[in-house]
Length: 415
Image (cartoon, helix red, strand yellow):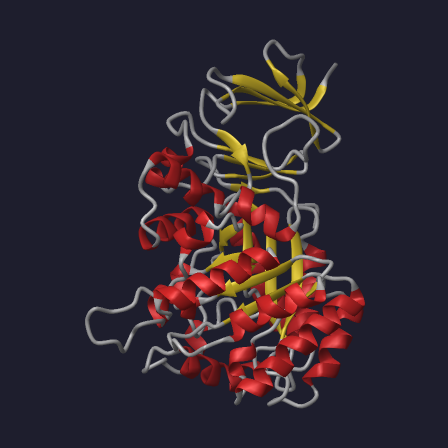
């Protein structure tokens, strides 16, 4: 048979010798040797061919606004949120769409065609950020899958009207309910925030993906409360907790208790080292806290742990290149992922585990979607890909080559 796409001399993770990967109708049809011709053939030259990157936590609506914001002089999360208020109030759908499209393109060129973005929904920007990102998602649907989380960054209790806006966001096309209970004023309001988000998600049958305890405060208890409520409610859809920086500030006995609750609740965890290494622990006396959650403890408990880019040149993080290789490498440094097994974990945080977070099929196996990256012949393993840091030579999404990083870099889109 003739394949739509045939990748020859591919080094995949499950075989010792290079093989060919045949693609038909957007799926991996056959993996083996001596496969028939393809309508298009790529010679991987013995280089790594691996499932595409997944960014399971990013903010496309805020991307690329850093240069238009006041400087974050304190370097804190709180000042970053405040600085964005004026900018957000002046957003237009066209502006948000333009920046989100540019950020999606950055992801795709770097081998990431599956993205989950948190989009602000509040009374400052209304639904403008959501509508801009939804338009960008539609415009780039041929080269990337984008999930949208309705994210009440300004709080729900402290920002009256946001509760109704979250309902509207789901009606207009948001895929999941977010949350940020730590931006409420009191413990009681934080719990009300969590309860509302869980109830809204359950009623609409969608996942919940919440920013939780993005703080150095060892007294923060939103994560513990979220886990307890998920256990009590028997939540049907997946629940994800992002950041959870305070978990690293707890004493060992309390941290162990919370991790056991997370295990019982089967909550998926996302760490965001690029941003949190910069924001958290900033004003500590030495020794300074590292700013990321307890990655090893969560892994030892058997929980899914992924990593997200989080921010791309915004008020929280002035850097960010939509590079999941860079995100994995920063995660490896911050979480001390050094041994061969740990390096596999670092790779998984932006591939398999991240795909699990968003509910996507992932990998190089027959019958799976043909969404994968083809690296240069000199890159034969994930560790080498992390060392080199270069984007893939070819980016394939659902059977189509959507980007090529060669001497004449191109992006393929039907837009």
